[in-house]
Image (cartoon, rainbow, N blue to C red; front, side, top):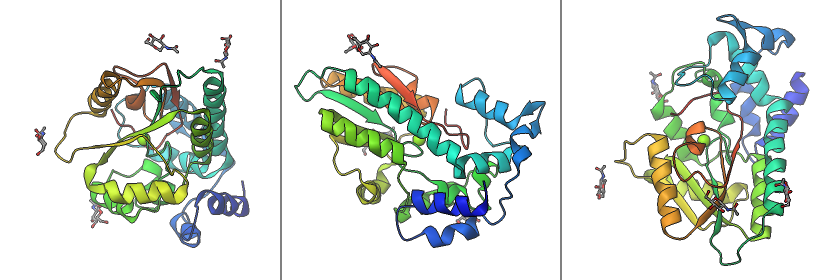
Length: 258
Ligand SMILES: *[C@@H]1O[C@H](CO)[C@@H](O)[C@H](O)[C@H]1NC(C)=O
Ligand SMILES: *[C@@H]1O[C@H](CO)[C@@H](O)[C@H](O)[C@H]1NC(C)=O
Ligand SMILES: *[C@@H]1O[C@H](CO)[C@@H](O)[C@H](O)[C@H]1NC(C)=O
Ligand SMILES: *[C@@H]1O[C@H](CO)[C@@H](O)[C@H](O)[C@H]1NC(C)=O
Ligand SMILES: [Mg+2]
């Protein structure tokens, strides 16, 4: 993919005013066709990404340095978007086929980061390097507080379909409560305008993602809701208890949350 196509893609995914900042953020990125074959411990970067997406590789903390260009190319190029769309189409087919009870208790659980909102403008920064540089909580939180995360188009398409079918939407995110207002404005700004619940993590909750999300889903079911679908970019969104009747995994080769 050439630079022009890359810019067109970014202009598309970045909903509003900040597209002009992006080229500087990715200026260091050199696209080269051999990147998928770059070797890390005997694996090609494509094999590494496949192992990550299938949860065969766990508890990894950084994208291998050798795979930074490959992951950047994947995330900013067409393939990431196509892969997200493919997940959305499978979920739509499942949802359309499902007969709702009609009592308003059939719900769809969405994670937020890298599932419904994209943090690509942040991850494309040189000091973040698509996850090849160590996670900086201060810097990431400052980015979240800006409320400028763009939409993931396939997930918004699914969301709109689910609403039209009569599903209730629950957002279940590891984002801290501190950021509730800015998250709400960010979600609304990119098109997610209605939901049954927006569940965020208490500031003093130090439980793992699997434990936290499982307990919240258990509470939803105890309240009478039925989790018909559950979508996330991390396996910790989809494993544990009360995971729902079907889970859908969107790609994320940039970070691992256990
Ligand atoms: C749709 O429902 C039919 C009949 O219950 C079933 O055979 C089919 O596998 C379903 N398709 C999907 C995508 O769930
Ligand atoms: C993390 O980000 C903050 C805010 O941008 C910055 O001041 C700090 O130096 C960064 N820390 C590291 C270890 O890079
Ligand atoms: C967190 O704070 C809430 C409200 O102050 C409190 O009820 C809860 O027990 C605290 N949880 C932990 C794990 O400290
Ligand atoms: C959803 O899963 C639950 C628990 O496994 C099951 O009892 C229920 O029949 C399933 N509902 C549908 C509509 O498949
Ligand atoms: Mg996520």
